[in-house]
Image 1 (cartoon, rainbow, N blue to C red):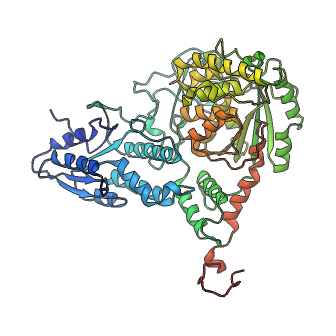
Image 2: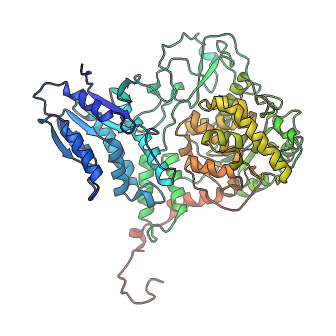
Image 3: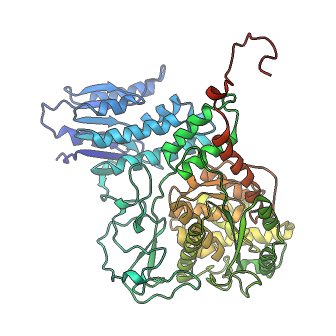
Length: 620
């Protein structure tokens, strides 16, 4: 029996999954006089006989009264405006052509034309008269090379599929020839279950940030343009409480409603909206029109475009309220001699930071940034560090036991989010988080290996300057911790709880919440990078709100940058791992914003290319 077709249906699947055949079956059930318009997006490649054979096989099985139109680029959106029924096969091939035509693979930033084409297609799908069936490859179910181009294609395809799914009436996943209807209105990680009852909290007792009630529709998370809606459901890693007893509030943080216990909440991944595409396109056009050679600003131009998209305004404003958050915590694994420093130096570093004596605090003064030192997990505290955000006194040894229990892990995640809220509510327009913990690169490297699939020896570095014997102890600790992590590879928070640490979970919550609130952050060091990896798992899309300060000497940090597709701003070989390089990059961000805002245009200044045969020296 032919399944019914909705007004707009998206059919997803991997290579040779049967997705195209299922899409055709959806439209074969229409009246026989319905001439389906088949929009083919694949481009013929001269000399590729295998590709020609695939095209012929697809054409042969379609009914004779169907018509075929080969469309590329913006032609697809135009074709969708004409009456249906229509079958589009497929979006992944269409996107490849758009990226090719724009010269994306060699461009330092994705050209504005790509965003314009994608936005135009999504709008055309939403307005299509229908019936309309679209086929696309699901990200991760096909062969994509682990290169910059491969990661760019993967990310863009995932974003395209999600945007189209939001404007479709039905989404189907085809696996091994079998079609699975996906729940309506779903977002990554959102369970399709009936809402649980939630005890109403009087308005006067409602905390900030608000904890969302269970069962809020995931369709409220983001609009088709990618902007996160201002609803509780739009919180990355949204806290979905179960019905339960009274809560114990985190010290120094906003309390949880009396009807919710932090031990009962469930962390649910929720997609973060992308930076504003319209402002980005305007900024790209602005840079192209400045009084300089094409591409003359290099990475500074890219930074200015990124700032404009994050701020949603062009030209961008220079960051003037940068805030550095330094977390103090202890790790149980540090007692195993994996660092050049003894465990108690974590508290010593926190005290020195509070006194303004660490490199990061000196650099912050020079850059005009303010610094906050917070104790989230020291065993005995530290003079000058804020104690009101303490989650736990140290952690377990991750090679033998979990770093934290489930309740403290949830509390750490919430604490990071509340710290982000506190900084942003105080006016921060750029955030730089870091940790001062001794031994933190051991759990951080373990997390990176768990997420990326790297072998233990591929992530072990010298960090604080350890000798060969300490390096071997560290490698063994990471190996044993990674074995303990394997049952939790698909659960980011469980990974953090098992082989992470208090500061790493707080950092992840901090970065996810900052992205949800559309405040950019600068990443620096392996620990922050590892936390960012997990934050992007719990808040997909958060990485678009971050920029990397520099490459690290730690091999695991290189894997982080590759996984998040981030290109460092500097390469100063700074090894402090405390945010010093990120603070050093602040003047670059300020300069990038001012270059876009204050540089004259070629038209206004008359600085335009001339005849190459002009007299020598005329342009000097």
